[in-house]
Length: 181
Image 1 (cartoon, one colour):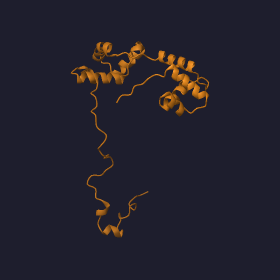
Image 2 (tube, rainbow, N blue to C red):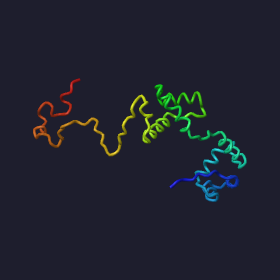
Image 3 (tube, one colour):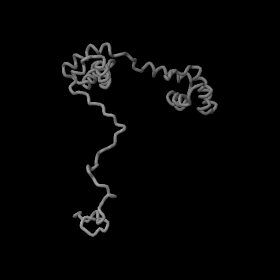
Image 4 (cartoon, helix red, strand yellow):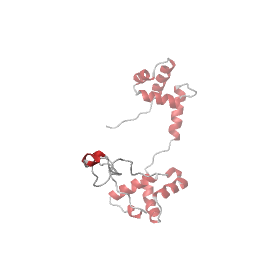
């Protein structure tokens, strides 16, 4: 099941403004507008100026935020040409990401993205992974296994101790009697 995100319309913003000016709860406004209550809360928090929500200014705020957002472009096309060259010169994905951030901020990608790109290319039969400085650490599942740190091998359970220990007459039968200091 996929979630489809929709922007609030100008009419919905006017309904929010009217509901807030009539001191309605955000839940009742959400029900009337047809969105989740958290959508109303988020809209009011993001687009209120001086704790006053106005539909027109909210639309301008939202449009300005959207215009200032970085546009998505699929970097695989241009990066697939440059990445092998940089890797062959001994650069790490971290260095490549930093270089792109400094020299071409509009085309910057994270080093995680570069590692994912190399892994996808490897699954497709590519050889970019051979130019990495270090081999990727093997994945080890973390569920279903028990923590084995601090456990003694061949230890004897306290329920299986000899009967003479119960009398506690010898040195060492008490827990702290052999500790010095």
